[in-house]
Length: 125
Picture 1 (spheres, rainbow, N blue to C red):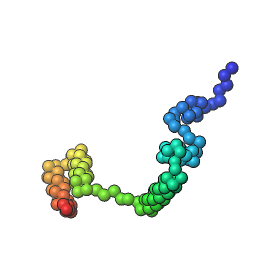
Picture 2 (cartoon, rainbow, N blue to C red; picture 1 turned 180 degrees about the vertical axis):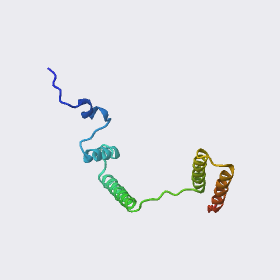
Picture 3 (cartoon, helix red, strand yellow; picture 1 turned 45 degrees about the horizontal axis):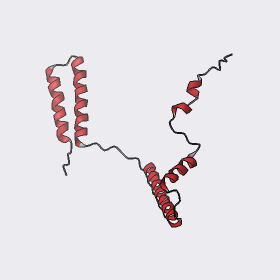
Picture 4 (cartoon, helix red, strand yellow; picture 1 turned 90 degrees about the vertical axis):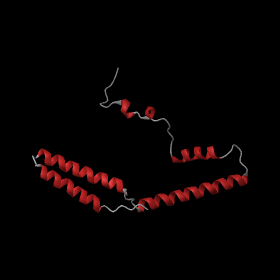
């Protein structure tokens, strides 16, 4: 006898869709540490590796908190800026063409594009 529960069990059961599952973060970290250490490490080597791991964790934490405070802005290169400007003028040309413009309006449009291209500050240092 089959009971209809109203939902698809295959979508609910995600275990088969994930390659590697751990119970929690500590088990994952334990697995990571097992890969770092030899089977029977010397006491001083164990302390050294743990100190290095603590430094890495602290530095990683500091880096991540700084990234959250500073949102990096995307910096466009001069070629990207030129490409965006030309694409903008191409779309204006298409709009003018479909609205039935004359040839002088298209010439004026591309003249304005050339003027804007000359105004772009390009630093080649």
